[in-house]
Picture (tube, rainbow, N blue to C red):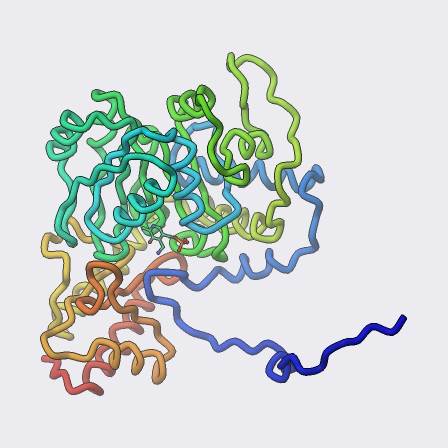
Length: 401
Ligand code: PMP
């Protein structure tokens, strides 16, 4: 039988081949990806349980352990972006009705509180003004007051440009029987992060920032204490797709107690985004080849160059007032009084193909955000962004010294 195909759907634009401009992605993410990542994406597909693919998954697990500096058995990738890893962490670590203390100094604390409410949890906010960070003493008094089972804190607050010192938070959480959950989407790979030494119970990041990989994967790791809490839940997490024990099995991790039992065979859980896993493997390989200390130092040097140029040559004020609280990954600049921030952003993109982002959440309309992450964390890229911003400020009539 002849089927009737309707011809009135508009496909005119679609008939042209894909064409993408080349932009310097120096906003808060995604960053430009490594050429090796692009090559990996076009490798032939494998099946999600083929031995060649599960070997690549094992490499990715090793790479995640190195990236987060942890021995955690439960270290794997989530098939989704940073938000997906955030939801997975939240719904696996906590059961309905439990209290989570949310350290909020930018949009990401608000976002975590929002999604934990949707999961029938009890978020309690500990707030600091945007642009500042938390002290262990502030955390300790909130822990004493609210007795949460989990504490959520953001490492690199990409909406404000702060870097949260984490070294002493884990000990405080442990003392009060809470697990420490860290969002390092905008910091891991670009700023020191020692998951085991700092007693972090769960940490996650996205693939598209300091890793220089394609967006679409969340990297996550759970401590032994976190794993035990998850395996002894009264009710399973509300999402099958994001159930950490199911994912752990698919990623070849141990899901049974006691720990000397053999690891169960991998079962199909969902079809992994095969090419993205190749891409993450290559990006993690590049981090291992460079070495984390060198990568952290490179991010710091690029940020130093950028901050010096912004404050000196361009006469701008940084939004984060305390130099030690500034993230090396995302730099925020206070928009001067009366300046059209959007016109600057548009000029930088139109004339220079350079991305400078506006604010987000509490900083909307108040800051510009520049990210030097992954392969963009170089002094040469910092110089390109400074030149583009200088020209864009001139174009909107802002006098630079
Ligand atoms: N947390 C932080 C600190 C982020 O910067 C971002 C991304 N801007 C996210 C979470 C969410 O990640 P995604 O956009 O990949 O879902």
